[in-house]
Amino acid sequence: MNINELAVEIHRNAVEHGWWEESRKFPEIAALIHSEISEALEEYRNGRPEAYVIVVDGDLVDVPRMETDILKFGKHKPEGIAVELADAIIRILDFTASEGIDIESLIMAKHEYNKTRPYRHGGKKI
Image (cartoon, rainbow, N blue to C red; front, side, top):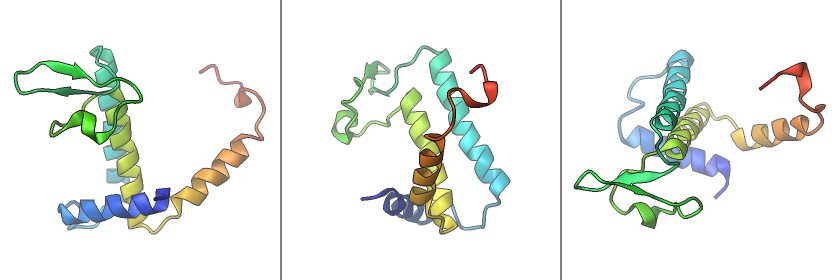
């Protein structure tokens, strides 16, 4: 499955779950993406791992890096810094599919352009 196919699948799921019953304006989409990034920051501030689940008795179970396939989460909701970043990507892909945007080509075009930029271009510190 390529990125555009994933985006279409993500959007189809969002539609099937009622998230597109009314059209959404871009400012709302941007705020939703931003909220997922903010949730990732809160996970970091709370000292949480990249990916974990909370089991029935309330204990946190860390899911080691590179072992985050769906079987590791079982029926539990995935949580954590990386999971919130995944939510942001899901929201981005949902939007791009809703607009018929070829996000895969745009990612590749931007990546190729970035490879031509000078070291730490723009003099930014971070």
